[in-house]
Image 1 (tube, one colour):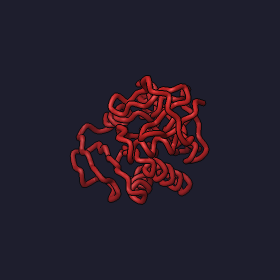
Image 2 (cartoon, helix red, strand yellow):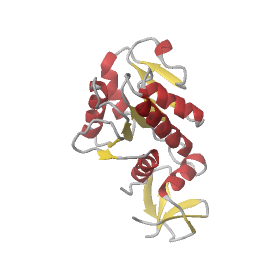
Image 3 (cartoon, helix red, strand yellow):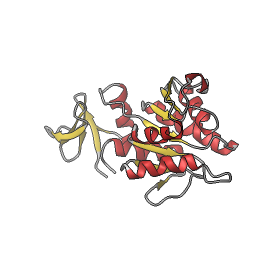
Length: 210
């Protein structure tokens, strides 16, 4: 892992590269160094103070979710929203509503990508409802519009094929796809046990350090 530090209002790596927020990439820097900072803290600074691009993360999961899945969806969404990531979900009930609630609790922005042409179908915690009118094809939008996807639940009966399709779209597009406990297992996903672990992996992907 490459050490990170903040100095002169910029984020540096130990090898001297500096993060260019406009280009969203590491570029040659002056080699300045400052106080060490963890990846999640670095991304929080970039998104909230440093002018970093607010790339969205998708939270996906089943409409029929049990209490543990609902709790995990809410916790993961709140953790990512605190960092400053805007979030995307399917906009309706179950795990999607729990994620929207967690995002709202943390003061974040949740985009709800709805399958119908009526934005009123969004759960009450969605910040920006987007009525697509394209049905389940909206799963491809949820996957493609984000740089990382976190799946919460969906493996238990009844299996959430919508969640599986979003994960598969994400993998095909080269997105980071994380599976929390209870999420379907697909080749190429990365498993996480806690919201903090998921946030760390998302932050590292944002910084191209994974």
